Length: 203
Image (cartoon, rainbow, N blue to C red):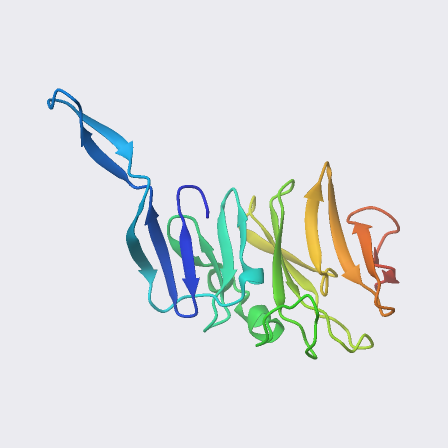
């Protein structure tokens, strides 16, 4: 759900479920008309017959809209009452094409390359598209792509790839990430040693 929309994703379809639509109800004296909610499902309205999503982990909502990866073209879309292909409009289709694996993200990570996850930092209005981890911990995980809702642009590639979760709590932004020993560790983002990401110093 996003705002007043209740959306349904299929691999090649995006639909709006028409729930609790407003209907006209006559008053007891039969003269004026009241507008009230129907409190029932009245069907669905197709928003696209070519764009869809089969990886629920690549769907994230924010106050600005609902973001998802299209299952067919691997483009990043924003739905905010209308569909916008922001990876194509903002020139980042190349990153999505090379960084989004065909596999869907799994908490087990039983494939060589795990699927993509999407996260939102509600405090700063940043959307992170994070490629999943590899089962081979010696292999470098691709960087996460950051989209700034305030700027309406992709701002950076960041070393947040391979995380299991990213979330806001209190005034902080946190990550959960597995290490090579099979442990899941909790990190606070944007604190600690400069250029140290999840225990690894980057260039």
